[in-house]
Image (cartoon, rainbow, N blue to C red; front, top):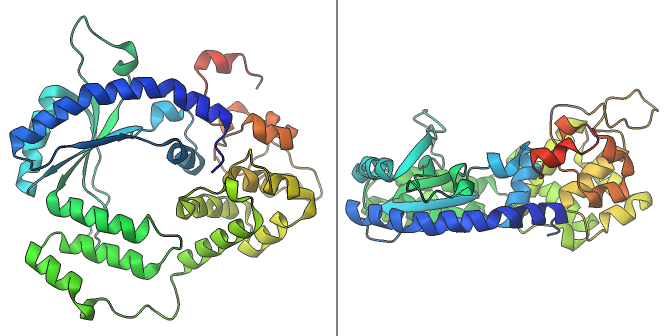
Length: 340
């Protein structure tokens, strides 16, 4: 996947601080896990650059390296749910709990990925403070062993697949429901052919649309533009199509135009950037009158865009997109010297 050079440089600037945060937090988390009786060491990771780009392109945060809370994330796994509160108590002694992510659903018939999430800040020793770590927040997930197993299976079903599938998404929900049952019942039902069922003749409409988007992007864009996580790319592009009132087939026709060949074949652009440029040049992301050229100051909706030098090389008018409609990778002082 092509990653904008500006984003890579910004990512590289913050990575050393994330590595120091990881080095300081891992031993503390391991101590908590041992005290509550965990049978495995905690795991942690720094969010990969490609995943950061996809999250920025999906959510459009104004200051991504301040707003994305899982740039560094860790997981503690405990034998059963009765120990989750014990983990929280121990964590509160060592870290500042900045936020507790609320449950995604309270409906009894929904079974979503909804494990316990805390947003933490490291408590530093007086006199040995690291200023860069003071403002960094990170995500801690607390799972039971069954939840961890279900997450691993669900990830194979829905995250590491090329095509979206209603059947697989439904199976993921079933597995999460079974997490609340005994290990023996989970094993029996998971292996039972009665509960697998046949896929429906008509697929889930939203997945049909996203699968078509993936197919079109694979057929019309340079392979270097495509991320490994094409599922998330399809969501991003689908949001752009909804914003511009563009059908999937219209997207195909636009991307196949000879005048856009340099954009769709560029190794320096990401897939979402190419689609954004084409939709902008087609006047579908702006609100100007029919027959008028696209006006970057009349963008539809309130979405923020990651505008990079590579994009403005192909479409110079993108330089005129207002600052409040952009994702900012630079510091405030850098922004103050950037033309509006």
